[in-house]
Image (tube, rainbow, N blue to C red; front, top):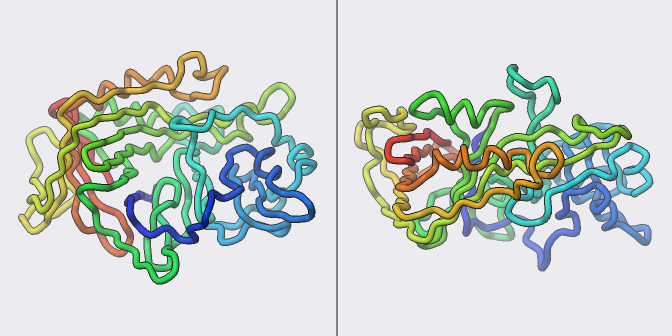
Length: 334
């Protein structure tokens, strides 16, 4: 899957005075923004996304909505059987709402174990060409910025938001298989603002149309969030030499000839882990991975070090990173 990098402080395209009326997850709430003959939002059942648009279809979307999947009225939502699904509450455990015309990402599952559903995703968005980020909130080119602003795809040491694909781990077993057990594209997310850092792991969930209740209606859009963690003592270093491969570590995603420069973030103190409520876990609640929270979080204990190339790899805002946790457990990220 495509790797994403989000940078806080980038200009945001189409910035408005307030939030979009389409910034909702449920089909009912999406079409509920319309009225008095005015269509502001529509729901695309194929991507299970609420998008700005009109009666004909979405506007400025990353991809078109498949024919027959675009609805703008409650009558159409009900007639297609898309009403009545459960959703995670707003907040840290909700899946991302895709900005700027992005649509929720769905893909085929891994071959093993996925007899339940033919599409899994919900942990990130497919973005328009000029946007980037797990929810398309960052820019990837100047066209993704507002007005005369320019897109800066370099990393800042004091303020960054990274959403990373997991390319490899060392040791090779355990956590890599745990993250990729059902479907591809698990995300490890780091948000750093000054000395404050948050960490989360998101995994793909089943498409709501593939998880139906006894009435034939979608039963739930599960939360893809495995856990959230917070730390208060992150330290940043700029201009450091990107390190070579250490013993028992992953191959780094940068040249090892000493030419590459990196930014390093270190979090040596306690990271407070928050799990989804256990009584809201699979299969009866809205959390797909509440029961796996503590198991996965054990691989992300401090000291945590995240090292990323200071400049992107090519024209897209994609950086190679290596993260180390629990002393010698390493991840190659992009």
